[in-house]
Length: 174
Image (cartoon, rainbow, N blue to C red; front, top):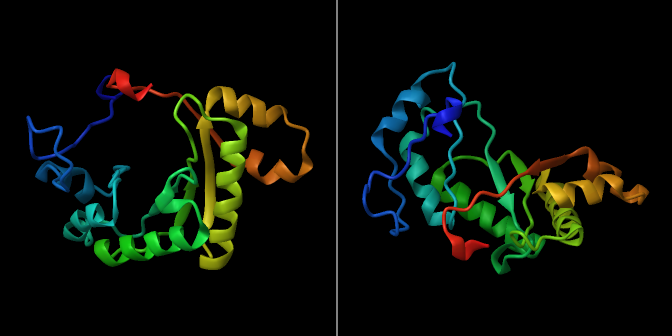
């Protein structure tokens, strides 16, 4: 990412990359304080992991706060579970979720049925919580399959498709 001009700020626990603790490098304040900088914070994991965002609440204003849905995870495979997860994250972070991202996948084994399942789940949550489903994120081969699908009921899903490539730092994630 740095070769593309993207500054990366990660954990403040250097040398302890295997620890899953909510610890951001204090240098993150630099881009957060610069109103001309686009900042993306991945506070993934569980709701307690979003607790670290409370510290930066005064800098995270007028922001889009996405909740990433993977309908293949047991914690987020039903509308009520997604809503409960959102409630917990909002409580811990003291920030409001404003949009949904459907990222339903099985890594390289993802099928178009996975993406459709996640889309349907997000539509339920969208209706209940009045949150916009922004994108249906999927790997490129599934993107092509969905784009070519003639099913008229998938038109909104197709309008919001966002293709990605997978990059793995560890071989076991294949």
